Image (cartoon, rainbow, N blue to C red; front, side, top):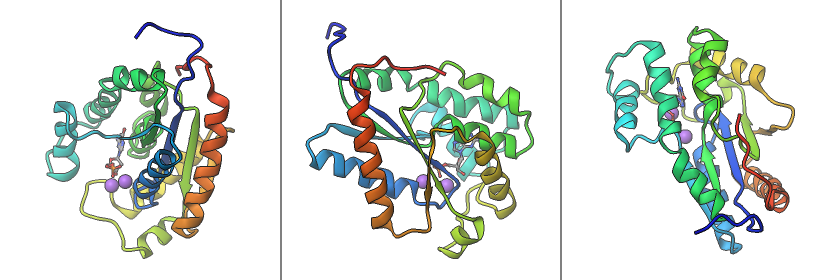
Length: 210
Ligand code: DGP
Ligand code: NA
Ligand code: NA
């Protein structure tokens, strides 16, 4: 379709946070709720392990394949870049995207591992800026108490503690920090209300890039 400046674009809604804070569950519920209200919304997940780059990431995270830290960082970023065309197309067609992790995770995890913060930010420069960022936050002790971490590479208390500190250091003034210890229904209601307000404001504004 030809670019139409009068067309209302979709909103880019991001959920960020440490592992086991309920992001994926809440992202799914938010998409379902928007769809039931007649809004076109799609769930998007990073890392997307289905692409060739994503399979390399999965080998590293889940299958014990070793890779240099900087190389892994660039793969995660490349995994976001390879999706940007599809993401932009959906947003321009008026579909809202609920995105489970994005570039803040990229920086938070790699900087928590000890990579230089400034270096970590560079590969993601130019990606789309979310219209709304939810940060689902709870202490690492609490997420441990809720069934603990799995077997993947980063699911360790010490690293997650540094990742959480890094997220707080990266936090932008417009982030919506959500108490992830609330019930699932409470969190869902909070996210849906804020998301609907943002959707009402996005209108035909231009997509922004970092
Ligand atoms: P998930 O599939 O959301 O559980 O993410 C897998 C793991 O990878 C999780 O521990 C978070 C981490 N992660 C997600 N995105 C990035 C990224 O861009 N860079 C790095 N280094 N780690 C990431
Ligand atoms: Na995980
Ligand atoms: Na998840």
